[in-house]
Image 1 (cartoon, rainbow, N blue to C red):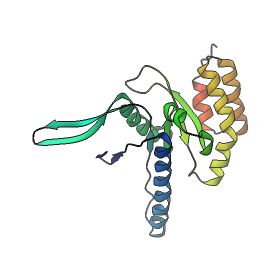
Image 2: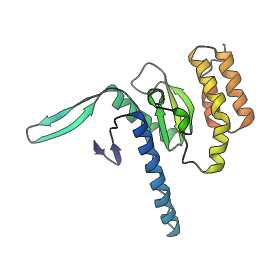
Image 3: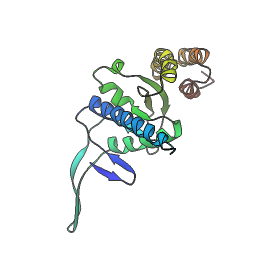
Image 4: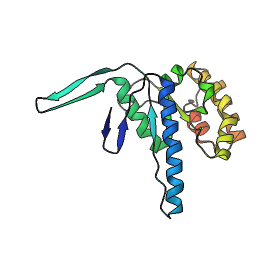
Length: 192
């Protein structure tokens, strides 16, 4: 759709196209960074945020400057999610809405990372990390905690805090430094 500073806003027909494009960008970036490393240069990093929802497309502006663009709550949430990649130090985040619209979420390396209320919103949103392009050792550890994290988030969304906490603590037993389990455990009220 457009460039926004150092960002790109892109529109896709479906959630899978968006996730595949994000993964292709990361693959291209990995090759670019290999060449940079060979030249003694530091790596470049990016963060990709993807959300799925309805939007309005149209032309905005004034007589001497007209631009085609999209606006909606879903677009704003995608921007917020992209900015959270820096907070969580991950390369790709998707919303629950995108996760729910994937043809087969199991076709990707995806796991829940946190449940947050983003700026400008009142309802919590589940954030998922897409980690297909992580280095193999990191990817393997994250794959071992994916199923219990998913079960924990499901329990959390059904207000079964005790079960959610058990799943998140189990993840920490498998991977003591797992940031997703730590984040999600903070979402479990201690008085429940």
